[in-house]
Length: 99
Image 1 (cartoon, helix red, strand yellow):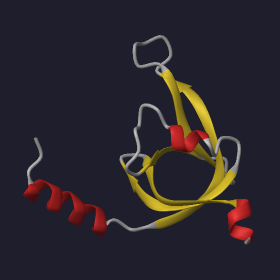
Image 2 (cartoon, one colour):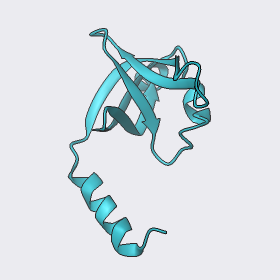
Image 3 (cartoon, helix red, strand yellow):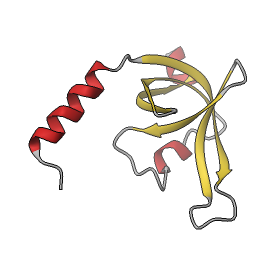
């Protein structure tokens, strides 16, 4: 069980992370093929041909239901990079950016 002090420390550590903006297409890749944890995981395919694992803050990392809505769409997102994962705080599609 996480106590209040641990929660405060986690929030402070996250607040100290630099928020960045990335743009790319959301894709789903098969990971851990052949294992019990095999499944589709979301990645952001950036224009520089690099891909980074995605996690939408406060969502279920095993289901990724909210990110499935953005599959094969170009997005711009703000968040932090932690442990080779882009943790998204805010996400917009190209159409939302135009409005």
